[in-house]
Amino acid sequence: MSLKRKVAIVTGGNSGIGKAIALELAAQGANIVIDYVVHPEATEDEEKQIRAMGDQAIGVQADVSKVEDLQLLIDKAVEAFGRVDIMVNNAGVETRTSTLDTTEAQYDKVMNINLKSAFFGTQLAAKQMIKQGGGGRIINITSVHEDWPMPGNTAYCLSKGGMRMLTRTAGLELASQNILVVGVGPGAVETPINVSTMQDPVAMQKLKEAIPLGRMAKSKEIASVVAFLAGDGASYMTATTVFADGGLMHSSPGL
Ligand code: BGC
Image (cartoon, rainbow, N blue to C red; front, side, top):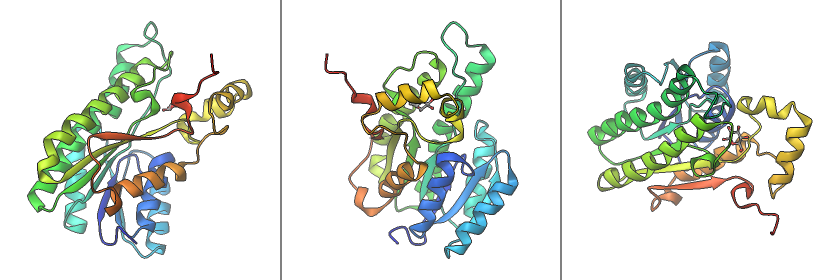
């Protein structure tokens, strides 16, 4: 129970990797603020699962692409639990469109939900952590595509590349306050964002061949890395990204 009584906010916390992170942090003893936009019933169900573990949880409906909603999220966390120790900027979307195809609306959506939310989520959480004192952890869920191009998914790659530099730059700026900023870069994970791939046997075959471990990750395998980074064992890690990708970024046919 290394996170006993810590308070964690997880954006996009009621599905996919976000849900797994919320449950894993709760399993380590943290009280959880689940941010979500749709599916209040899924959030309620998750709150019950967390309470059954002996922790507290609240759901907050907030669109993290808007700064005022992010502030509401922080305010609700402080109102319910008195502080914020761990901020997980997880909410993310992709359009799977190329440089030539991407519309202005698609570009704005991806950049606002993925990057703008992480930037202001970091800013507002850090302000709260400074106010309360004692440091904190900010964990940005990026992707292998913070560094590795994905042709046909350009805006997504841009947003994740931006999160990479947010992690590094804010990590340096906030180090003196003992607020550690780290990224977690998953590869292909069995989540709603990847349903189109999971339903396409040809794409699945290609993916499995490209991943040295030969399979997609379960969300829990990403959440366990986040829990480690939120805990005492990661007290000397900041301004960097940990990749959990089954070797994907470094796969090579040996040519
Ligand atoms: C993307 C997926 C992609 C995976 C591996 C993830 O970040 O969301 O679309 O399949 O990376 O390339």
